Amino acid sequence: QVQLVESGGGLVQAGGSLRLSCAASGSIVSINAMGWSRQAPGKQRELVASITSGGRTTYTDSVKGRFTITRDNAKNTVYLQMNSLKPEDTAVYYCNANVISRWNERDYWGQGTQVTVSS
Image (cartoon, rainbow, N blue to C red; front, side, top):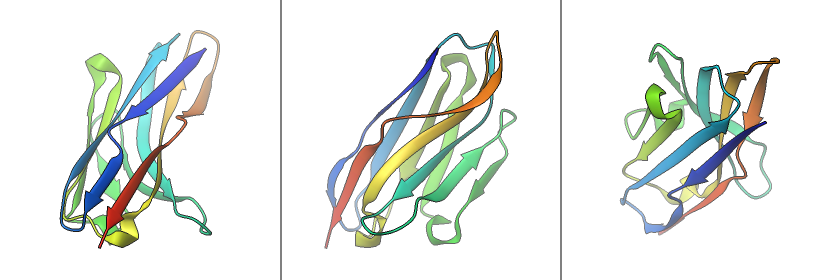
């Protein structure tokens, strides 16, 4: 089994910053891509940022220049540094990872962490 545990969410004023962390643990051989998605009330979940095992990153247009995704392969951890936060960034943020275990390769998701940006 593999678990993803997120941390770092909270309440922040517009213009502020937060750093999310997501640590993967369990029967992990290696991890391919890792990413962060978010879901705001009444909206569909959207992919915010992703990073390959080699460090290649992608971002949705609305966060480019404000958010930075990084990972520590030794710690099986992915981070999302969020700067210049806006009220429209308010959502539950979920991390995901494509994990190769001893038995298979599959995607795992964390439980989510709330980010609230006040105006």
